[in-house]
Image (cartoon, rainbow, N blue to C red; front, side):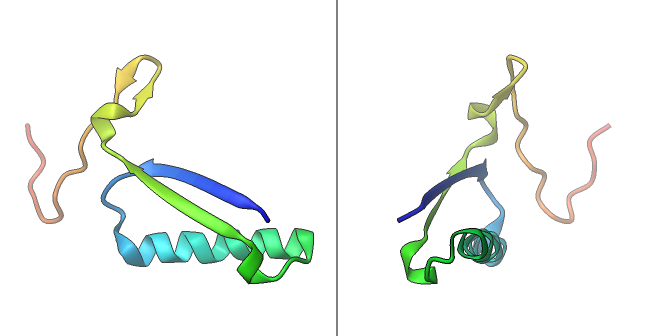
Length: 70
């Protein structure tokens, strides 16, 4: 039983996470010939400041419609 753990920045919303999970499930089923029910996908949302790249924390996503700070 494949177990796939995906970590993403928080704030992508249920619709996008559902699409990610469906496409990952499709890919695994295509390669393994397992039924969809055998594939488990878990999506962990990480607060951007807790996600480090090159030793630097990520930045919070701006709210939709907000103006860019100058």
